[in-house]
Length: 126
Image (cartoon, rainbow, N blue to C red; front, side, top):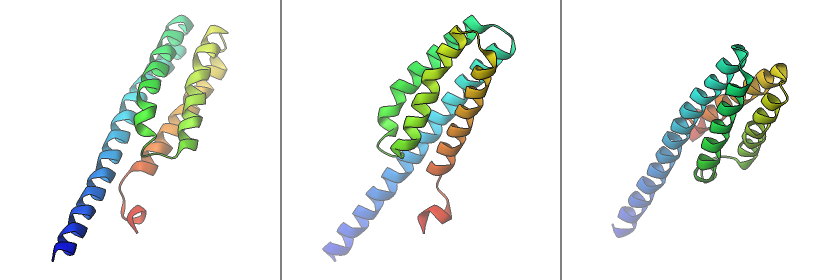
């Protein structure tokens, strides 16, 4: 009976860790989506200095979150997001709106993929 109880406790701990990872990843993606939207809005308005400031805010927020996400998420995806956030400010500083918009779209796609990979679905459980 004790072994069954220990196995049940272990199962609950694993399920709680998975749920925590999914919720923290979703929260991070939601916040980063808002920041990417601010970057895109500044670029679409033609205000590249504001776009550069938004890119700095996005990169700072990402740098604060990526360490905690590394526990739950594939590091390859994190590296791709890291590279995309690092490119936004130089593109804005170079006044290259087309590359800036393209990198924002790429970053949005990466965040969507991260959110989908971390979501709890039946096919990811079995």
